[in-house]
Each structure stands twice: as C-alpha cells, then as structure tokens.
Amino acid sequence: MYTFTKAYTYGDSGQLLAFTQNGKKYFYHYNAQGDVIAISDSTGKTVAKYQYDAWGNPTKTEASDEVKDNRYRYAGYQYDEETGLYYLMARYYEPRNGVFLSLDPDPGSDGDSLDQNGYAYGNNNPVMNVDPDGHWVWLVVNAGFAAYDGYKAYKSGKGWKSVAWAAASNFGPGKVLKGAKKVLGVAKGAKKYLKPGKYAKRSIPARSTSSRLNKKERRVLNKIGNKYGCHTCGRRHPGTKSGNWIADHQPVSKLRKKGQRQRLYPHCQTCSRKQGGYTSSILRKRHQRR
Image (cartoon, rainbow, N blue to C red):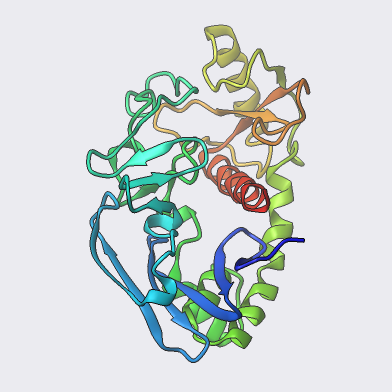
C-alpha cells in the first residue's frame, strides 16, 4: 500500500497549477517569463515568494515551513538547493555560469553558431528564450508564458491564451479548477503539430534523429518547402534567418516508438517552436507520472 504526501495538478497543456500536501492545497503563481514567483494556500495567503536574476540564480527566497521543500522555481524547472542546479529532464543546468553540465546530443543547425554550442542555455539569451527540457530552445513570447494576458482571458471568459497561467495566478481552488478545464482546447490543438499536417505533400526519408542535413537533403527539403510551404500551417516562408526550412521529423523524435522510421517535412520556425513546446509538456507529464 502506498501513502502519497504530495500530488500535483496540471493543466492539459502541461502547466503546473497546484499541489496538495498533507491534505492542504497550494497554488503556483508565475510571471511572464514562466518563473514561479509565489505560492499561495487555499485562503489566498502567500506562503512563499521567489526572485531570480536573468539566468535563474535565486536572489531572494521567502518560504514558510509548510512549502519550504518546493522544488519548482525558475522557468518552472526543478531546483536542487544543495547543488544549486536545475533539472530539465534531459540535462542539468548550472545558472551561475549559464551552461548545461553535459553536451546536447543534437549538433544543432548548420550556420547557427549559437545553436551549435552544445552547452549554452537559451542560445545565451535567457530573457527572450527558454529551454524547456534541455533539448529545445524557443522564444518566451511563443511559449505561452503570458501571465497578464492569461489573467485577462480568465477574468473576461474570452480567449484561450495562457488560461492555465491565469488560473494559477488567481487565488482559490475553485478558480484554478475552472481555468484547468478551459485549457482543454489548447491540448486538442497540439495534435496537428505532432503528425504530418494538412499541407504535407512531399517528404524525404530521415537518416537519423539529428536536425543536421547534408547538402542534398537541404536542397530537396528547401525545394519542397518553397513549393508547398510549411506542412503544418501552409506558410510560404520558413521565418528563419538563413531562409532554410526546418527539418521536422515525423513521427516526432522524442515521442516515436523504438525503431519507428521517420520522414522529414518542411516546418516554419513558428510551428517548430510550438511543436517543441507541446512535446516538452508531454514529456514532462510522463516524467511526473513515473
């Protein structure tokens, strides 16, 4: 027989909303960067406050004994007080120097020196970028971390954007549960990013899970993208600085079955980042259920 002392509540798009400990409910509060900045109890009383510098180093921590063991902090990552490291599932992040402690197995994109730096966090720009699990880097403005917009959406009852963050920003268990239900639409929207899209006309076989292509693969994939557009949204420009289409592995590398063959489809930068965010949320849920 198992005894559970703590249980977490998530929105359907992966956001951590609350936890129950010793029969009491506590709620997470986030800023626009996605950092946990406070925890409140079911009466609305603030029981913890957190502040960080741009790289995630704690600058001020105030927490009552009841929530002192909370490990979710900067950008929602798990923080180890003893070592000062953040756990991002794939790798450990060291905020004092702004680097990962192990090399990213993906060599990165051709022509992008920041992306090819296997130890850099958030492409060396933690203000604009987040790295959900040690594999993907995506812009904060595209990550769904819009706490203020989410709050307005929740209060007005209109729109879907960041409702889970809004729910976490509102005191009381009833409001959080109501907000969590509204996130269902976001979860359903994730499906189109995890399979070949409606504009997928042609593709090429993938040699591996790496995003690095040889010259022939790059030429053919760009030709497909320029002719048919992004396979998910149909956009006719990739949105990358290089002008190259992003090679999207289908099935998604992190979610595919062992030995399952993949093909490469042209992806625009926006859809690629959204796919990374949804995939990260799925992996985070799987990790929490272990």
